[in-house]
Image 1: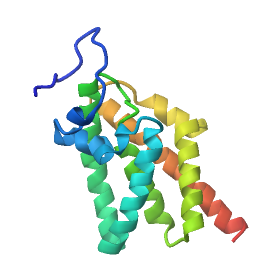
Image 2 (image 1 turned 45 degrees about the vertical axis):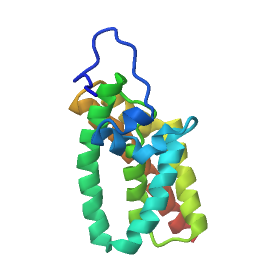
Image 3 (image 1 turned 180 degrees about the vertical axis):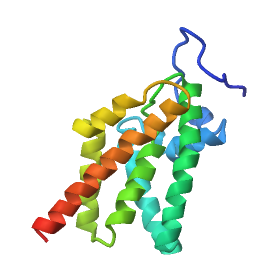
Image 4 (image 1 turned 90 degrees about the horizontal axis):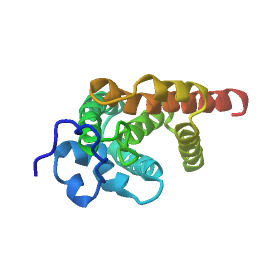
Length: 178
């Protein structure tokens, strides 16, 4: 299957489906290995996939290895999100969830060790900041729009800001309450 390098002017956006998912390695990555195909709340499903995969990764890698994986996943994700958005004809498609995956890995990597309830709180906080986009997250979301490398970075950037906000709340909670 041949996909366009960029959407033709006036073209309707393409819908992501199973065939699209497997038509290019970038799509498989950007759509969170299928978690982004959830019919409702794909960002939540992508974050859940990120949570589950992190729990496995922390058993297989040492902390520095996870840090290196985060760097590589950000670079690869930038490429995958850029290409997938272009192929779908949407600058920030909801089905692209690699941004949630990598940003939530960052939250867990920096906040661990913590128990299940704290991880659930981190999940809820991250989803709040990512979905509601208060203040700095809204700024980050609006700063990098469009197609190409700038837009691909924008897909990731607002989730990294949401991760920072989550980590800030967790740190304040640990300082004042714990």
